[in-house]
Length: 304
Image 1 (tube, helix red, strand yellow):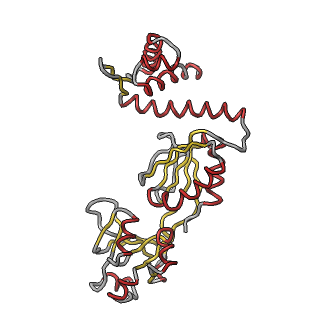
Image 2 (cartoon, rainbow, N blue to C red):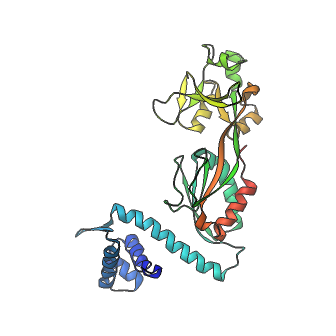
């Protein structure tokens, strides 16, 4: 099948999905309801897949339809962006920009940098999602993702750029240290005289630290915790309230160290943590909105 044949009916399909009926879509497209229905029928026949569930009351996407719709919207957006690029100055990229950011780091560190970019390029319409899950930027139609951690190996159709490692330190509130004393070693932290607040992603997961071994390697060490908290900012709240000692990233605790609400302890145990990467579909890296944001993030976004 010629590639141009594959584009037939996509605009009708997206319009029907948005309108929720053949009749409403026909009005938007200035077509007859019959023409819209036939276009959807031909598309389903070509794909050998039912895209809509039809009842007397409603029209809704099937699971396959939802997946296909997401990709069709991206394809049509890319075509529209290509047309805009021909008639607009490359210095002013525009169009929809789909971003996936890690929940806490994205909110605290990425958003200020991104807002500066959006102020410079008002023609860009961002769609920003916050999640700590590791998505497939190609499969999910994402223009760019910021990720902490994850694999160091990605498929050839995914571009990536390393921006550094987070720095992990041990810290506690002055109130806690006055009450329980200053720990002088990791062994003392694990003893009964100290309380530890750790981060855990799932229910039942034991708390852990990343520590350097005598051989210079980094290992994950599971520890007994007074509290295991599954949200970084909530863990920070617990430590600020004096619940215990925690190992946390400097990008999260930096402002509180500077204000004195937290104190760094055991400096010899500071260690590099998870890496920060930018990820994007290779097929999109020359789109002005993506290439400009990539350059902006590379210049402005650092993990510290």
